[in-house]
Image 1 (cartoon, rainbow, N blue to C red):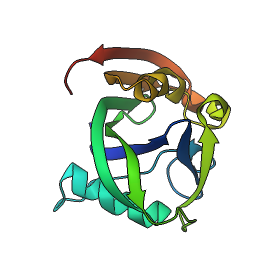
Image 2: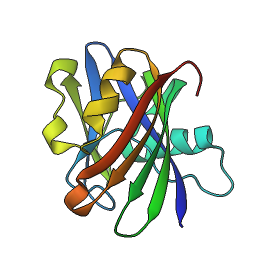
Image 3: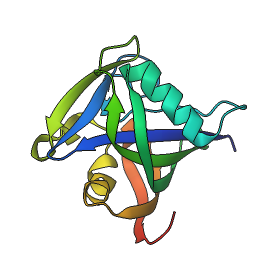
Image 4: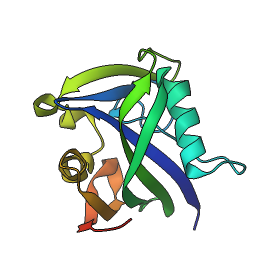
Length: 155
């Protein structure tokens, strides 16, 4: 079974969060945090910093690991391992890239209907400064077939 290691960062400056509209590749047409695949010569954190700069044009100053999730896709058996981070400080101004179009949202207006269906389950934990671990199994049309999500003390 193929396993891909990735990272994801949600930039949260209460009461707003920065999301990006995915313009190409996996997840096109959905709002998401920033991040991507970890390259062989990178740590997860180095990869995150690179991905956020490439996708949104900003440099993260502080990051905090808040979650770990595994996403399995029934049709191909692939598992995507996602290390979830949160940040509230960066330098630069978010700007559109070839891959993402950043936009600020008020936390009460997060566009869950235009995001991955699992986001509505773990995003409240992230916004509440909780740590979490989860597993989601997706079927056809990205319907969640099984899920497990736990609040944890340590990642």
